[in-house]
Figure 1 (cartoon, rainbow, N blue to C red):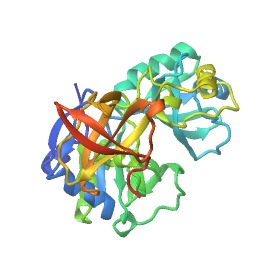
Figure 2: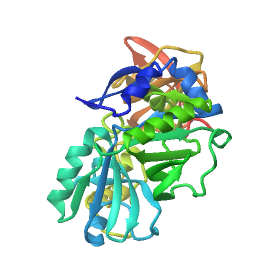
Figure 3: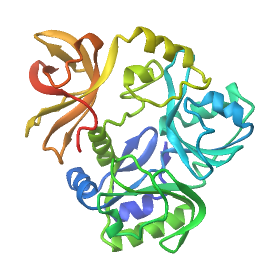
Length: 347
């Protein structure tokens, strides 16, 4: 079991610590609903130190064949993604973000659960040099609809980044204008002691701490997937409606993608919304039913404080993708009504 290097300061802030993907991380502080609403209306910060952080050096064309998106179209200092490493069957080895440092040097953020797998996969499929920075640097995100009312606005466009720079008078390894909440903000990599000082400064400015439960509810509102829940090595981008690839280049899994685009798929990812103030929460694998017939299954679900209703996502037979139509979810024998909805679920 790994632990966030920021736990000391987070415990002082009354973090409720739990396990996620083999890491001890803050799950929530006071209430995930309050934390969620802080991001949607104000500002909050998250500890993301569990995410894998890699440096890749070597021939550009080798990495380009591993990554589903074209890495040559973006200039240095730009992020590429979300994109993915796919297997020969078109399934996700992982969905990732890339940072183009130089033509022959990239940084990569992986899902925590896949860090070791992806390091091995890259080495198996290339001669690229892979350095694991995960345990050298911590990572936080500052996100919110009014984030710039709390911190000075950075001179970066969305998905731009800068290395070895300052933020709030602290030296950080990486500063990017990015996030996974649907709101504006920044993500930072830096030594744990530096980010601990930043957390203290943020709290003093009135920025709320938020845990991974909140990050999960926010990403579901936006329709963002979680590896191991909504996608895995058997799920393709076409089935997931996750457009992480460029067809005008070669990459592992491209043949399967082309095949599915031509012939169609049996299942497709959808979003759903429950009725206002309905609190019965579907669980993973609860079946979608239309007139009593099972047509799919839930992969993720949560209660959205912002929408005051249950939301989530799952997979449905492509023949039954009745967008805007109501269907049922069987939750332990009780049928609840939900509407098939497109992403994002919030505007």
